[in-house]
Amino acid sequence: MSLSDRLDAARARRGDAPRPAQRPTLVDLAETESRDEPAAPLSSRGVPSVGVSSVGEDDTPRFVAVGRDDRVSSSPTEGTEGTEGAEGTEGADAGGSVGDATASDGLDGLREQASEELAERMGNRLTDASLDDAQLLTLARRELAGIIAERAGHLPEATQLALIDDVADEALGLGPLQKLLDDDTVSEIMVNGAGHIYVERAGRIQRTRSVFRSEERLRRVIERIVSRVGRRIDESSPLVDARLPDGSRVNAIIPPLAVGGSALTIRKFAARPLRAADLVELGTLSEQLVPLLYACVQARLNVIVSGGTGSGKTTLLNVLSSFIPADDRVVTIEDAVELQLQQEHVVRLESRPANIEGRGEVTIRDLVRNALRMRPDRIVVGEVRGGEALDMLQAMNTGHDGSLSTVHANSPRDAISRLETLSLMAGMDLPLRAVREQVASAVDVIIQITRLRDGTRRVTSISEVLGMEGETPTMQDIFEFDFAAGVDAEGRFRGSIKPTGIRPRFTDRFDDLGIALDLGIFHLEEAGR
Ligand SMILES: Nc1ncnc2c1ncn2[C@@H]1O[C@H](COP(=O)(O)OP(=O)(O)O)[C@@H](O)[C@H]1O
Ligand SMILES: [Mg+2]
Image (cartoon, rainbow, N blue to C red; front, side):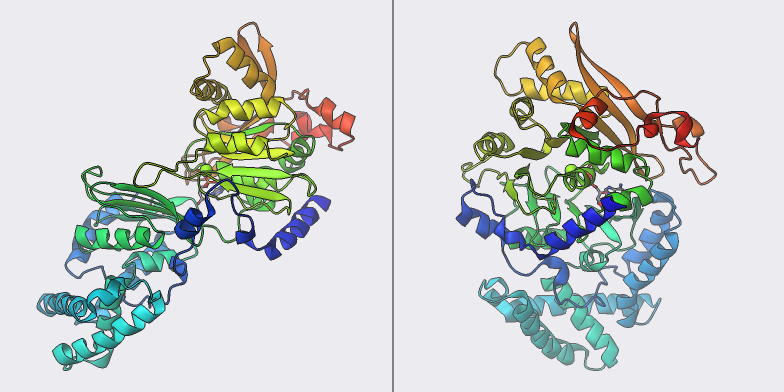
C-alpha cells in the first residue's frame, strides 16, 4: 500500500538529515551547545559490562528473597529476568568463590580498598575535563592493574580482571545501569533508591536483580550522569530533568526531596521510533485506523492526542507527524526534543529551564508565540501543560490548522476540560465561555491512548469535537475500544477498537479536498465483528 511506501521513503530521507542542523533559533545557542554536547553518549561508552557486580554478594540473597514477591509483573519475560540476574551476579562470581561468605567479604573489602587507592592515585585527573571518557578509563585501568597486582596478585587472573572491571566501572562508569543502558530491549530504567532498580521491557515493568551497593554510590552515578550534560545536582538544586547526548531523558531527584533515597528515571531514546505499522502490530492501532489518521492529518484537522504519562502520546504524535506532507513548513516545540520528524522542512524548538541564578528560562509558551512569527504551516507542540494551550488554540483557529499536540488527560472529555483549564492559566482574564469556544472550534479530533492493565498501549477512542451547544462543547465518539470483550486467561485484553457507527462530519472535508478514504470503516457491520 502506498502509505507504507511513503513512510519508508520519508524515513530514508530523514535518515540522511543531520540532526544538529536543526537547532533552536530562539534559544541562546552558546548555552544550548554547552548543555547539549558533552562527551560521548552514555550507552556507547567503552565500559566493559562484565563488571556490573554492584550486585554485591551480601545484597543478592536479600534481594532475591524480596524481589520475587515484589515484582510488579510476573510476565513471560521472567525468563529474561532470570538470565539477567545470572549475569548480574556473574561478575561477582567470577571475582570470588561462589557462596563462600568469607571470601566474598574479602573481595568486597578489596574492591573498597582498590577504589579508595584509585581515587588517591588518580587525584584530580578524575575530574579533568580535557580527558575524554575513553582516556580516563584507560588511565584508571592502568592504575588499577597496579593496585590489584599488589593487593591481590595471589588471586586467579580472571578474578583480578573482574576486580579491575568492577572498580573501574564503579569509579567512572554507571555501575549497574551500564548494562541496562546497553540493553536495547530496555526502554525505561527506574531507580528507587539504591536497592531497587526497575526496567520496562516491551511495555512490562520488572524489577531487576541489580542494585547499587549504597546510596552514596547511586548518588555518585547520578552526579556523573547529570554533570555530563552540564548540570549539577546537590542540596541546593536537588532535582534535574535533562536530556542525554543520545536523546534519552533523565530525571533525578535526591534527598531530602526523595525521602526513601535518590530516585533516577531514564527514558531511553528509541533509535528507531515506532511507526504506524509497528503500532498496528502492537495492537495500539487497528489497521483500518491508519488510513483514517492519515486522512485527518492530510486534511489539516487539528488533532490532540490525549493520555496518561507513558501511555504513548509522544510516540503516536510522532506517527501522526509523519503523515504531514513533505512541503509543509513545520515548527515543533518541546520541553525536551523527542519527536523525530521525517520531513525536511522542520524547525525544532526546545524550551529551556532557568539556569542556576534563575535566569534565562524560555518556556513552551514563549516558543509557541515565537513560532507564530516563523511562518509555519503547522505547529506541533509535544505536550501542552500550561498557558501555551491558549496560544496553541489561537494558532489552530487562525490559519495554522493541521496542528498537532498532546495533553495529559484520561478521556476525550477530560482532554477538553484540561485544555480549558490550561488556557485559563495563560492569565488573560478571558471568560470561561470564550475559552470553551476557542477549544471547541480549534480542536477537530481527540485520540485517546491508554496504557491498559495488561501493559499494552491502545488507542481507546477517537472522538470528533463538533462545537458548542449552549455552554458546553459537544463531541461524538467515532471509534471506541471494546472493553466488553473482557480479558483472556493471561489477563490480556481481548477487545479491539471498533467503530460506533457514526460517520464523522469531518469526512466532508476529505470529500472537498479529494482525499480518498473508504467510508466503510465507520460502519458497524463492516468492522468484521
Ligand atoms: N504503542 C506502544 N506500544 C508499546 N510501547 C510503546 C507504545 N508507544 C510508546 N511506547 C513506549 O512507551 C514509552 C513511553 O512512550 P511515550 O510516547 O513517550 O509516552 P508519553 O508521551 O505518553 O509519556 C516509551 O518507552 C515508548 O517506547
Ligand atoms: Mg510525552
